[in-house]
Length: 352
Ligand SMILES: [Fe+2]
Ligand SMILES: [Fe+2]
Image 1 (cartoon, rainbow, N blue to C red):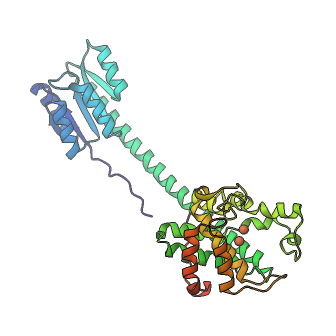
Image 2 (cartoon, rainbow, N blue to C red):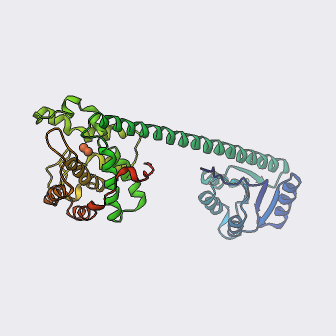
Image 3 (cartoon, helix red, strand yellow):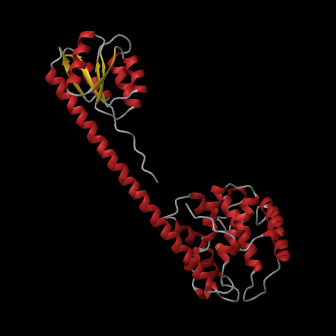
């Protein structure tokens, strides 16, 4: 990513003064100290000038016809927080001067104009402007470095998690490739439903890592050929929550986490872990649930052979409304004959 930073302004000042003599004195002096100058006779005129040609410093008289210096200070602060403001004031209005400082002016000096005072505030304001520019450059560079590092850590973590899922599934011939197939089928379903590419990238991540929480389920339970006891089933039912917990520190996208947590919810509220129903179930959870179940049915298990696509789809159809979103099931049934194998597809880049 390219580092974008606002351009630094040159050594220049806008002099806002309605008395021609005073304006002339200020401009001549500033030019002799190598400042470029532009002038305005009123606050309104100064604002117009600054819009087209901003300067790092504005010197403004406090009392002028029209809206006056205080209004100008407030307007400059709203639009250009970096511009340094110096107020030229008569010595007999301390309250108004304080008001200007509260509104965001940096310095003031008194009429009648003394050039050494003017030079001092002008140079101090310029120095402050330069230092603030340096600091914000540094801050921007630091933020950029931190963002880059965070992205790198996240990528490394996610690819580690993907390998972990792969290893976990490969240990059991019945589940090998499950997460990859669920991801591929979920993406086909999302594409058929017209879900945009950005959402599909997030869905890809959620679907691929939906069962990562199974690392917390002991092999003896995970690969048990017979029926599970109530306690064992409780441990298995915890895996969506564990998946969410593992990924939460690096996956900031809420839809991804919600999709993972909710992939065993059912439309009638009988699912887990939160017993959500109908529209409460997050979009990604609904999109993962169908391919998840389809893949479980169409791969063989220790206790049964794999079903045919036709058999699996008729079971999914029966679950429309109670278990699955009926519209999503309709679409899935339509695309099922054309579902691609993961090996033939180029993976969608993971980003969350
Ligand atoms: Fe699961
Ligand atoms: Fe699964």
